[in-house]
Image (cartoon, rainbow, N blue to C red; front, side, top):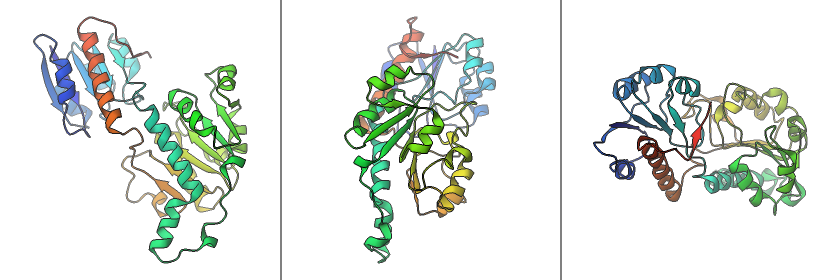
Length: 317
């Protein structure tokens, strides 16, 4: 039995190996490639695959001769061709609960940094250009409205942290019953209304063909000139060229981005020229506790399937 662990950012996969070594006759192959063609050579005869960033596309899946399970290191499974896996009878699993606090904390941190203009104030002070006038105005959060696009596990966690800070919280999620949103203390609204009325908008939607550039120029122009956009979900949800234009022209106040359409953010991206935008490097998911939970859960999902048991977190096409 063979399992390929494809990873890029971790220093090692000893924790995963310790879980998988319980399987009889197990061979574990480490892979760090991001090239699907190279992954095919490594995983063609694999019974299981753990994957971080490499695209597990239809070609990869089609070449796998006896794979029974693919586990994605993370919540999103947009790097895996679910339809191709289903056609071959391969179970696809994810780790849906591992970083709820981390990502919701990060979204909140970006909201607070933008509201208090922390990064801009730091820059002004370092350049000896600091003055109160340069950072004005700063409104009180308790008088403002927060809007959440999506109402999965992370935004449900975030809403608990936002409720003491904001006057009102709006939520748009067409797949959640309005009663659920109301029970959490928020108001369910249509997407356009959320963009019109919110002072801070945090994106928490899945990335797929239907949601690509969900946040387009038309929606961005509905925002208040004083409003901010935050994205800790997936870069492809926002049309970055449209965002650049509205930020450049001060149609909205600013944005906080942890994710980008191309990662790392290209050095020639026009977004880098803006001073009303706060960047982080796609690490909203990270803490020492979260990474341990992620690695253990991913390995255990593969272990269960290869042992002949049902996984806990199967993702269906």
